Length: 307
Image (cartoon, rainbow, N blue to C red; front, side, top):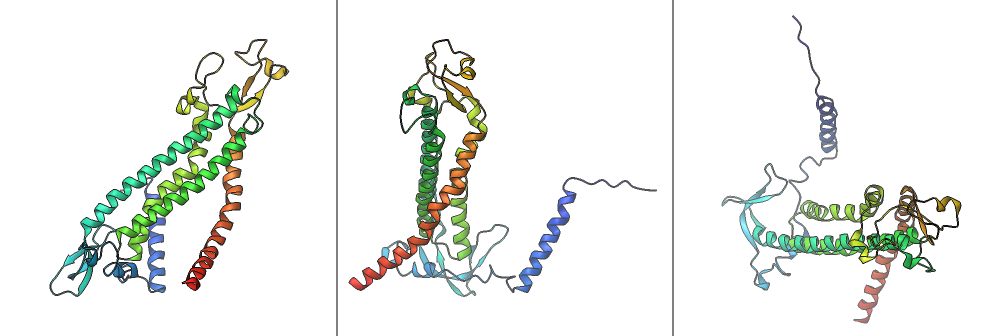
């Protein structure tokens, strides 16, 4: 008697996962970091907060105290303190105080996130007006030919500015939460920054690739209408004139058209946007990342010598 064996889609994923777990355990044993998280010591900033800072007893907050007990982490990734009279006395941060800071901090971060979305849509709408509105036909700087380049440059600068503002605010909020270990601090910071930087960096690319061909009107095109009185709808294409043979046959264009728009795909604008974010953006971000610490060190030395 034989039995048929079936393979489910998850069966093929079980073996690579098991192999990776075995390799992870082997590396942890080799490098002697098997109990690294359990042996993780408190951050110096956590210990200093008991003496000085907004959570110190001097500030009258009473959020930190020494108490006998131990830290444990059950099924969740977060450590929790369990009081025990026979355990060693440890420094504890009131979880309710940290939750209050997190609640207010996430509201501020969501407000910045909403501002980022509004700013990105505004830049996309301005690019649409440069491409389709008759007001920019004779403009020397903002016109149909320069619209993809100007829009890509504005979007790239906006991404850099918002990443800097949001990251600085997220670091301040995470430091104010006063996490005990470095792992907890890094986990809290990554959870705040990851989603924002992904949305901020790729929202314009996703819009051009998937949404621009749907005929949307961001911010109702700021009230700008076409020759028929309809709101301008965003689309991809190239400008032309009725004097060109290939443009004179465009639909909805009479014999006396002064301006027509030849609709195409969005690959040209997508290539320009990708070029600005992958080539132009590192050209000015990398020098800033290298020079900023040196300038700050020079400024601190000058202040130290002056005092």
